[in-house]
Length: 253
Image (cartoon, rainbow, N blue to C red; front, side, top):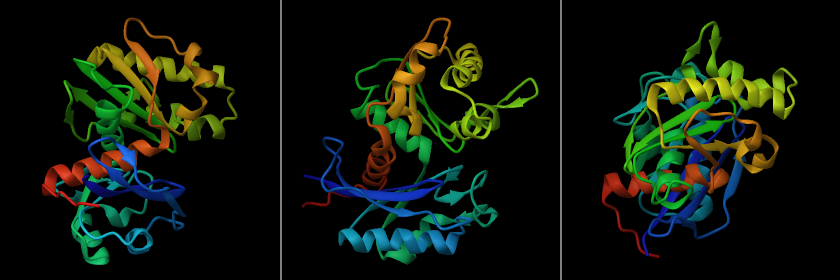
């Protein structure tokens, strides 16, 4: 079977696991290391290299990044160190690990994984995957094809910046209960519904583990909404998928 190492860089932790890209299943228990304070490039590359060593992995590696990624270059840094802006992060991680690394936006990775192996599997038309955590990530999928780097968490709703108002971090910061948070998230989702008319919303990120607390309180006009099925493994799985796709790697276990 094809096994690719996927690594997911998050605001509080960097986690990885080898993935069977034919099934979307992890082939070993995921390993997590705390994200270095400030998430500076040199510090993060050290953690990525440590994860590669932990699994003794040789071959293609997929890595997610919480910002815009074009051709391996990171172009934004909303929730990490500004040193990432304009950085060839593919090369940074490839040099640090000695393996062929492919970088992808974290929400895009989660979207690919959910569309193929999770809650979006077999769904035709437009699927919009949103990850609520430190910010709000987005992945727009049409008939299984990703439109990359949508960054819909940075939309403005009148005077409200979406991710600083409706993210999970905003819920914690403003001490909102789940019903109060859902009222904010509903306004955001209704705006996206107006813009994109998705057939399905998939809600991921850390809150996906607590769907029973918020799902019934979210209000949409016409789109269907479900929680993510892969939970916190989606980024890891999607990172492995894009690494295999872009390198044509067929690593065998």
